[in-house]
Image (tube, rainbow, N blue to C red; front, side, top):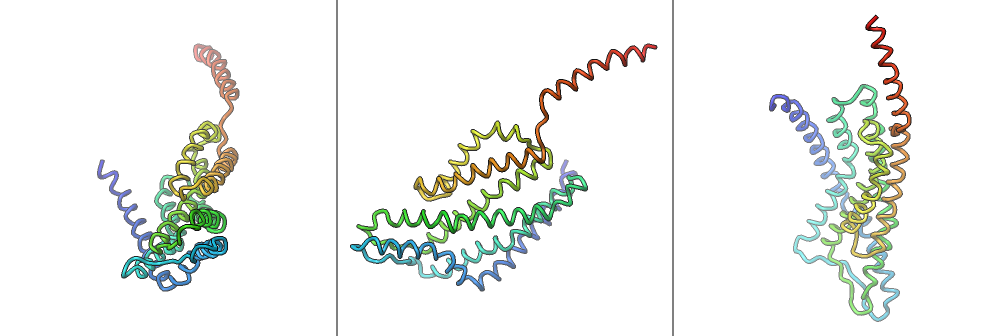
Length: 270
C-alpha cells in the first residue's frame, strides 16, 4: 500500500516545495514594499477615524498605536506575508492543478489556465469587495459605537491581523463559483445536488460570516448576502456544465432495456 502511495507523496512534496519557494520569494519582494502596502491596508481605518472625529465633537481624535517594542517590525512581517500569498496565488493554484492533473482526462488537463486565471480573479474580487464595501461600513460602525465616551486607540498589530482575516475570508469565499465549475467538470456534483443542499449552505454561510466578520449584523450580512448570490450563480454554472439527468429519461431507458431483453433471449434460443 505504501508503495502505491509513494509516487503521490513524492509529487505532493514537489508541488508543496514549489509553492513554498514561490511564497518565500514573494515574501522578500513584498517586504521591500511593505510601507505602501501597509498604507493601503490602513486607509479604511484612517477614513473611519476621521469620520468618527467629525461626528464626535466631545471626544479626542482616534489614533493608531503599537503596544510592543518591535511592533512595527512584526507588522511589516505580517503585511509582507499577506501580500506574498496574494502575489504567489497563481503559482499555488497551478501547483494544485498539476497535482490532480494525472487523474484527469486529456481535455480536462488543458483547463489549467482557466483554473488559475479564474481562481486568481475571483480571489482578488473578494478582497476588493471586502476592502471597498465591507470594511468602510464595518469600521465606521465599530469605531463610532461608544466614541462619544471613549477615545479610539487602535492597536496596529491587532488591526493587521483582523484586516487580513477579513480579506482572506472574502477571497476564499469568492472562489465558490470556480470550484463549483471544476467539480461539475469532473462529474462530482450536479445542479440538483446543489439545489438540495441550498438550505444547509445558507446556514453554513451565516456561520462562516459570523466567524470571519466583526461582531455586528451589518458586516455579517455584507458577507452572507454575496455568498448566497455566489451559491446561486454556482448552481447555474453547474447546470450548464453537468446537469442532472431527468428521472423520466432514466425510466424510459430502463423500460427500453426491459423490452429489449425478452427479444434478445428469444434470438439467442434460436
